[in-house]
Length: 506
Image (cartoon, rainbow, N blue to C red; front, side, top):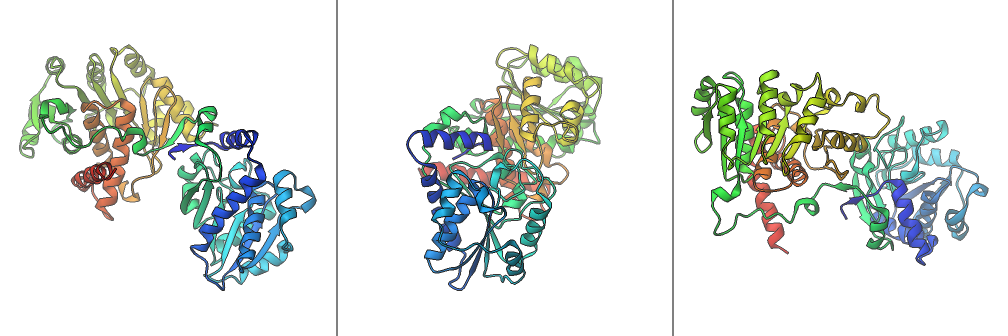
């Protein structure tokens, strides 16, 4: 269930299912049942349930939940934020089926002030379809939900969060659990919405997977469904030369650490051979630190060109602390001349800041088979794609990265707590692995190296980027609190072991 559907796509999936013979009310009943199952995991016999319903189908789901919970013997109160006469369609039918009386909003507010830790508030106000800020009265209600000590279960998506973008317009419900249906939405995994969802539970309520081909999702949750058919175990009869050779470009002698981090990460990710190319003074520094990683000397651009003539060097990582300037530009151009994978990061990206279109032109001219990944963080992205800046663009994060990838002609990895990976054809993955401790010096260099290591082993640019981002985040989870970049590298084998065991388990 790795496909992500926007609210409009989900609406289409519902419509296609209803046209296929399943009534909307049946889907609503099924939704209510799975929400009740989630509630029963956290309810006590004496728990009170407060159900807050909105005017649409999300409110209809709430009516079903309220009736089912009451039938199970729970103390249930239901409030509706509009006149019942305003209800239409399946929501109206669910309301008519409900035998519970409505509690006024004023009384519900009073009850919310008295709730205990054992009580539960069900947010059935708006779900994913809300596209405007909450009205003042609803905003006050949301503030009371968030201030209460009760647990909160949101149906579909916490009210106030955009299902398309994860944007919160003003304020939104902070849920402990969010129960959504058929497929999750981008807003479940994009910040700030992700921080409002709590535990995300995806339940099936009667929609068949074959509607996906008609809906045409282009956004995906980053997981092994994107890259899992690539084995993590080397072939039994294999050797280092058929696992790829990654070349990492070094910075000057007092800025060598970043390239070593990238090189070690590529090696841990499985690249059969890894080399660092450096000027002589920097090479001496590397020689004091490295054992199994080789060192190539290149004091001049001509030396660099000669090294790249070796076709066995099938991936280059360039950017970590390499320096910003014309020489870095020239080296990037040389990397793009042959059929190899190229990861362009950090200083290599910023070397093209004055005229990023020059970089994109060289990528477009790269020989057939060239696989290019750009790995900017938000500030670097803003400089390369100023019109797609989050502060000025009307597009959501997913759309911004899709547009950037199409313009660059390369896979773009927009790094952050909710890293987004997009390829030029429009496919996009949203990543959820990782911890806040990744906001630490050098972890971006590690990510560039991991992606490079996967490119060297033959993954496509999109697969390498998506898998690299996930492995990077998962290794950080293994490293735990207070991690530093080196520890992320050290835990890559733990992640590989996990992936191998997962595959062998099937």
